[in-house]
Length: 359
Image (cartoon, rainbow, N blue to C red):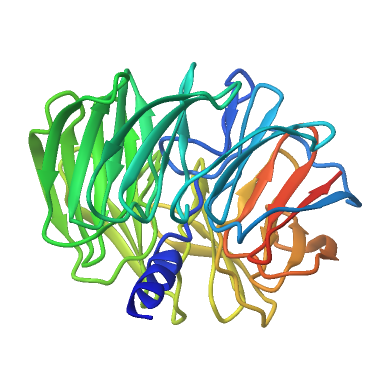
């Protein structure tokens, strides 16, 4: 029973939202800066085109590479055809997957709650190698320049090469709730709100900032600095170069998702149903909307609108400039992670194991 409670707690902590990639990238839902941008136009109104039932709750982000959609459902990794949602391959693990995998040009690397880190050919699912962290993997995995960066609940961050060999390991004071990466620096944030900066190649610590706030989401790298989101309603903007605080704002509502950011704007949803657009670096409110339903996933910024999904499955397309509702819909189920937005449409996973495709 205690194990189940711990996993559920880890699931809540790992409700993370990374953004979609630029047009010329091949992977969507796997952005290193976590700024939650998808450079596509969303055609509204949206209609439910397909729904499939998978074997377990979808607790992590849905990814896309080439014409393939990758969904982690319970303890099974599933690869689907983007157009038909027909299964291409699947792989059953011995424990649950509650965090977002990462994909390179050849591999998909997946972490599970028993501490197993497994690499597979992303095209056919063929097993390549396994590494054990001996503690649950409950937050996002990142890949860059031949290294996989993986935090585990033993308070370590691991850097593993493409052959499954550990290159370095750094221990932090408590659980890591998210990673971001920019250039040759890795930014892990801990549950206690300490943001660190490591060299990606060696693991050498470059800097540290203590926010003294509880953090349950990933750091987000913006044009103006790094934003960390305090669970008890605080947004903090940190200078990426000298690691000092630029600004801070208190919202007044709990937040378990990261912000989304483009240019001088950032967007955030709260557990009491607020959606707020701030101008950064001043954190001046540009607009605020109240929907009275909880948001546990980050907004997705697209070319023509802002897409949000509430915890109880209400979908919103909002005007990015004033927050007005352009379209609203509903799916059946609870959503503890956001949406994947691609040129083909929108994919949403639920805790009941259903995958919705809307276009």
